[in-house]
Image (tube, rainbow, N blue to C red; front, side):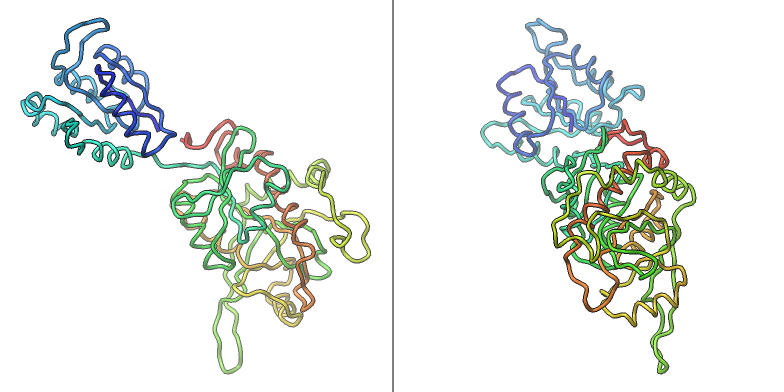
Amino acid sequence: MKILVLEDDSTKSELVKAEISSVDLAVSVEIVSNLRDYTIKVGQNVYDLIIVDLVVPQFPFDAQAIDVTGQIIDITRDQDCLNFRSPVLALTRYNEKAEAQFEDLNRKDITIVTFDEDSGRWKESIREKVRSCEPPVHYPFVIICALAKEADAYAAAGYQVGERQTIKGLACREISIGLVVGVIITAPRMGLVSSAITSTQAIEAFKPKLICMSGICGGVPEKTKIYDVVIPDICHQNDSGKWTNAGFESEGYSVQLEHGMKLKIDELISKPAFLETVKRDVILRRAEFPEGADVLDFKIIIAPTSSGSAVIADKEMVEILKEQHRKLSAFEMESFAVFEAARLAPTKPQYFSAKAVVDDGSPSKGDLFHRVACILSAKVVYECIKSGLLLSGGVSLETKRGNIS
């Protein structure tokens, strides 16, 4: 957040700066002491908030401070000024100066606050104004995870990940990919409902160009094996329909991967170097090798998947899913919700999901393969974004957090 302060009294300017810092120490505060320097600053930079004294010297080294209210209004609210729409707060000791031009200040949307050191009421006015002017945080990409272990896998893979923080009510960790800063969001719980709400909140709050998901899934036997990473080209909802006396009648809903995104992902994962990059530095413990395997062996595929609100640990249920969707390769609990949230969002972000297989949906399922699968899926998502998916979504890899057009 950038704030410009016009104030010739150094003691007063330090008091103002201290109040601003009490709200957010990350705020950048620039202080000028005369009208000429103020004019230069507002003509060159855009500020989130401007705080002005109405009685200051006109030029550097002027000994006399004069009433510059009219000039401040003309300069700042000129339509050609970069800060034409920036909030302005007039903090002055001289009430008569403000009162004389109250109508003009009010008409030009300049808030007047009396600087009274004895009462200290101006302090709360400063803090409230700073809070209200805090610019929205934008991220070029958002990664949704249903479990903490899925989100933690990015740090475990060795990527540059920030500390956990709450932003807009969401559990977030920033992640840097090249020069781009995005965010990993952990949903409050597993399932379609939580992921749909989380994805919708993230799209609304951060306006990403790309939203995606990583994590773990179940695999359909004979179509996938442990650690295969499945990217849905179409994602079905497997638990929608109607219960009748005859049983459950499925009414399937589906969301397809956007064609351009599918082509781009297919191009990326078809390169042998991509698989080798994902596999590199992933070390398995003895118990993490699937039965009969002594090396890490997996593939990355684009195939149909299915999402439902319940964990599947029953072979008969897997057979039912296979009957619903002949080409089904994997099943899990969230990707459909992320796809649907993106499809229906007014901003229309690009979307995809990549999840690694950890079981076949049988009663014997456990968590032995979760750690490695989480890392593999995280690496696939990371490498896809790094390799150019943001470009296909219209965002340059040189774009940083908060500067998205």
